[in-house]
Length: 150
Image (cartoon, rainbow, N blue to C red; front, side):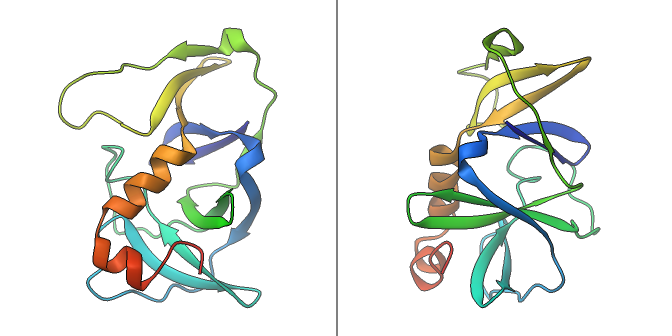
């Protein structure tokens, strides 16, 4: 698992979906984009869509830019998820995973599929298909005009 930090909280992504981590040097803002979409950046000639999950995960969104991005891939699609720190890589056994709350109050985290217990820390496991659906659902116009990972 790729363990990352967003807004001071711990989250994990299946390492099979992570292609690389990079330091974000510049971001081009996309007009009329949903709040989830921070903008796009150029990564060695490829335009990468950058998203900030803090708001959609119910975390405090500060004016501080997140300095790193984790490139998440599923099939031919890729997006950059902005993170606080360079992620850690951990081998996770099934006893470290607990079921996530399936139904809950407004503001629940729909793309979190399980709770990760790592040492003395707890975090959420991000489900990539649900995460990409959330990105696509932000705005049909923006999703069509600026497809994820193009």
